[in-house]
Length: 361
Ligand SMILES: Nc1ncnc2c1ncn2[C@@H]1O[C@H](COP(=O)(O)OP(=O)(O)O)[C@@H](O)[C@H]1O
Ligand SMILES: [Mg+2]
Image 1 (tube, rainbow, N blue to C red):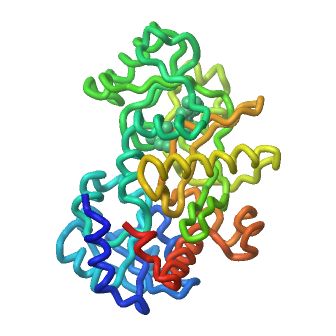
Image 2 (tube, protein in one colour):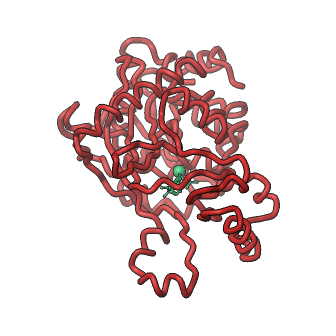
Image 3 (cartoon, rainbow, N blue to C red):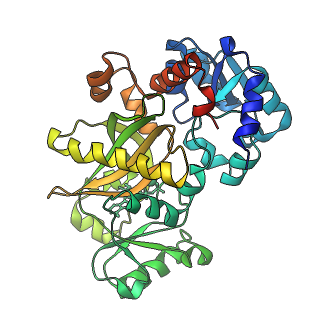
């Protein structure tokens, strides 16, 4: 584990008047770069050849560092280059998708905006559950064994991306039948089958509130809310039920985009308290808790009850819907505030108060 002393030592060599904000060119990079530039920072993009068109067309990256694979950010020379550019890295979903938690916490010697320790909590479904429960959030019931299934459940694989291989079932028999089918179709390996997480299927709508935990202001802000547009699950409703049955459709959840959402105001008290409590618990399990953006993945039923099934302790791509226009960011900050810019603003404020050490790890 890279220590805070080691990061402090790296920061001492940084030129505070020439700080750059850097990230991997994907996910929410445009959001992060736009925000950085609006707050006066230089930007550094670690980029693959095939994606350069994005940063050429939008002109938001001052430096492009070309790589074949994102995992090259662990190379000594690349890390040195990032430090030479006085780069503060803003991690997003592609970091954990392309690198392991161990690599990020042990081998990446570039200051990161955020709390690296929480990566360990986020990566493990059991630990995540412990964190969220401790914060008093309502979670879908989990079933220890398929024999206990007495209602509609969703079966999830460990670390699956985009819900590939997830399936629904409503009894032990149904579960084993589906599992066999999924194995036969090659969607689940026998090894994965050993570690399936069985969770109550909550009937409701997807709601993803996006928060920003500011250590500088000692506050958790709600900056936006989105819902997801997922293929093929969001397409299934367009196929009539009779045909659905005939071709035995199973939903998959590949994220294609995000849709901004404004909630009825009566849901805000609980959602705001949930954000506060998640940060309060994070401070206990991994001081100083969440630094910067985080997102809860929730389903809200018709009661309405809010169930949380996942947390991302970093910027999520859903915040891209807020670039320039989130109603919640507007309510707090007026025009042109959004997650990427909020991050840059926090860094700027930390530098001004000589507290940069407090927001990078
Ligand atoms: N307990 C649940 N009840 C109903 N839907 C769920 C539940 N858990 C997840 N989902 C749905 O499944 C999809 C993928 O779930 P998620 O756990 O976020 O997977 P991943 O993050 O690996 O893509 C999302 O559309 C989500 O709304
Ligand atoms: Mg998810």
